Length: 158
Image (cartoon, rainbow, N blue to C red):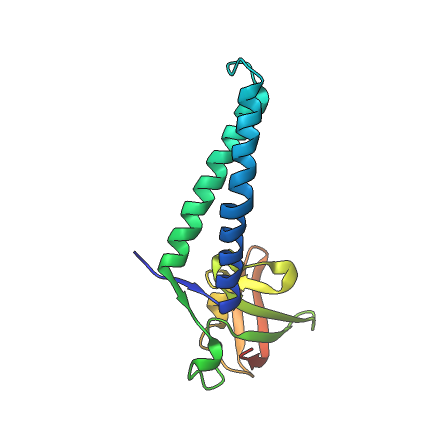
């Protein structure tokens, strides 16, 4: 099985979700199934079907998180000898060369990516263009609207 890169924060969030699913959600759906069964005829019981569907989703998500955590490679960018280069987990300050707009991204695993919070997936085109470059370099990203150029202003390992 291939390893899945995660930051420490991403691994903790997955562990928290797994704990919540196993201790809260699983028990709640079991209770909902029991209550729906008590209503009688299961063949036309929408609450029973909905609870069973939710149980399937919860159990599937538990298996998915378990397997991801088992295959996880937790990477702390501060412990890497990156010498100022962009690596997994690094936080990068960029300037769009066309508009001059400044943006900051942290390169993270796929499960922890959230563009609104400035976290982009390691597999995204911009992250792939940034990996290995240093401050002062220009990264060209093949975006849907054409080639975008970003100057790397700063690289931090938080």
